[in-house]
View (tube, helix red, strand yellow):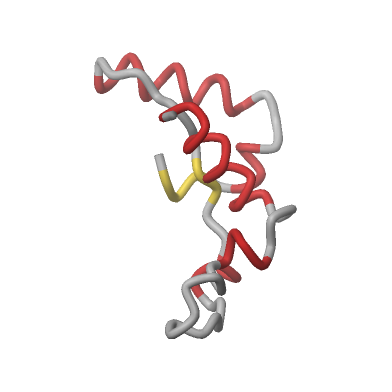
Length: 74
């Protein structure tokens, strides 16, 4: 799920949110993606595919969440 408050993802509240989503929608949640304004405002160059936010900011919590989900899907 995207648009989760970063403060929620960084605490034990993440388990409550995950459980609520799974109960509400009767689906497994593979990850929660924190919402950060800097991701929307990222000014990578579109002509260079390597300039993706997660490539340039691999230690950012958003990037870590995306990588974690991608690994679960492999």
